[in-house]
Image 1 (cartoon, helix red, strand yellow):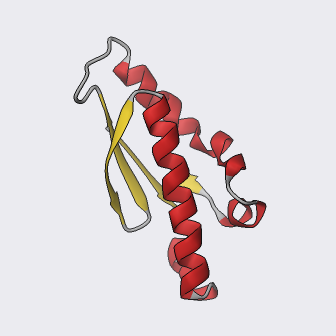
Image 2: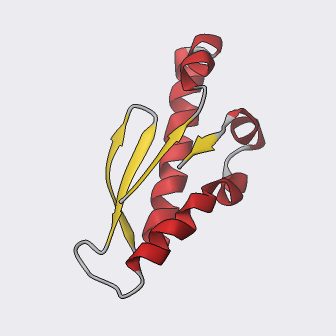
Length: 93
């Protein structure tokens, strides 16, 4: 299981207008879902600004723990977000 959330999102939400925050979060969630699925995981839910993902469900892999740990480098994959969005984000996994 992997939990990954944005740090400082409350302060970020206070600075951005609601439409821009929604766009940023939608972009972030879409990208994280793609990354998790590419590594054999499945996003169980989005909780506020966090992503909860599982590996080994429904299909068990011998290296599910390794697949989950690899996602701890999610910040390496944020480059596909718009440069404006990526500059605002910090992750904690």
